[in-house]
Length: 364
Image (cartoon, rainbow, N blue to C red; front, side):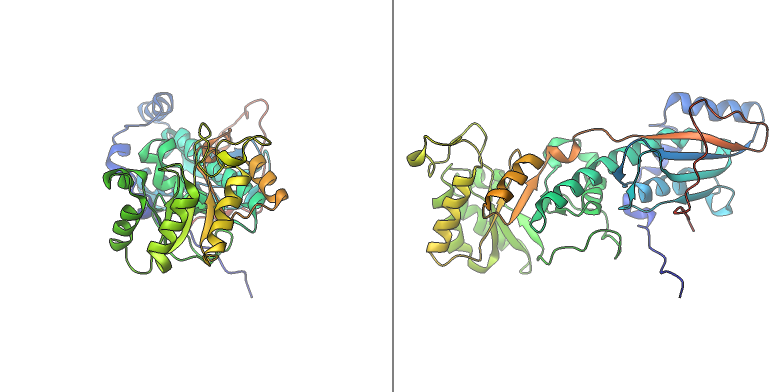
């Protein structure tokens, strides 16, 4: 039996500004000039460009890159331009070819930088998310990137975070990932996080804000409530757990790294007391358990790094999930494009070479 062909996200999922792009907006000026010169000179070379990863990574952005080509290549349906690609979520080695695009060069020369940028951005998020998921396993990892970057980038970043295996509850992905495209999802209900802004609107009353929030969510949605508004995590945890009961999935510890929670002050002296630390987690866990609220989960966020998660796990700190934000966007991931074939004599750029990849699959 032939292997089941995987599915790609439909192009409409990305809500690309097609008219904006077709008019040349957001197109790199130098790349646009290549296309203009080819058209002005009446040249239409048949070429193949090869896109390769600069570093080992978890690939993201291929579906979005393909959607861009489908939207912006003239007469895409005619089949003159042919794309072969790996799939989002695949592990890629440094130098490995992830995509090839073949056809009349003036059809897509202006799109090369956009393709590389899409792949770089989404792959960075996917790779970072996977690193956190593998470090925290079997604990959940939840992505909260919204306040760390431009809003336009959020939907695609949500997809990329899911590709890496993280849950996204503060930014909606444009579509559900097809089965088999990402690590198996954790068995959790739909979740929603109570915003600090709503707590402020309710006069700083976390319980009142959480009740109102839950009342305006569908019954199948469970709520996650932050405990740091009053900087008294134990008291707030008990109050919201008793008030929301079954609607509460868990509580979020997000104490600022510049503050010491009220429950920590009596024990200060032998450990770093600020932010989300092991003693704070234990204080909240023990208080909940003592009141028979052991099913309330603890989400730890605020400045989470791979090293901090490793330390928490090695110490056996009772955390059920980790939240990451800025860390999703850290580091550098890049791709290069090389013209490797042409229906005329060609000298490939020095330092580049053709790198066939049997894992590529033609886009249909």
